Length: 81
Image (cartoon, rainbow, N blue to C red):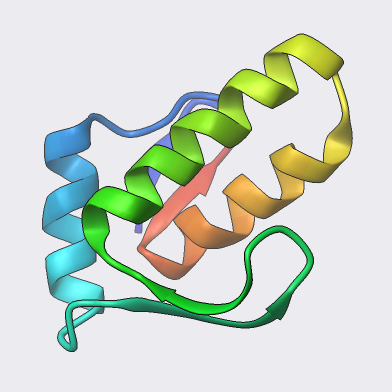
């Protein structure tokens, strides 16, 4: 588990390495997710969605994107503290 400061995304290089390690099929799968529905995202698609969610969080100060980002990152081996 890699620890990150709360609210900070990993670098894209760190994200890509974690994605490759954790998603051997080449896709991150969601089932009935309130943000993206049921789908499988590639590394670049998931990265864009994380960056978009982070920008929404900054703009709206809504906890929804924050929880989603945290959950995705945790699945990839990152922890916000």
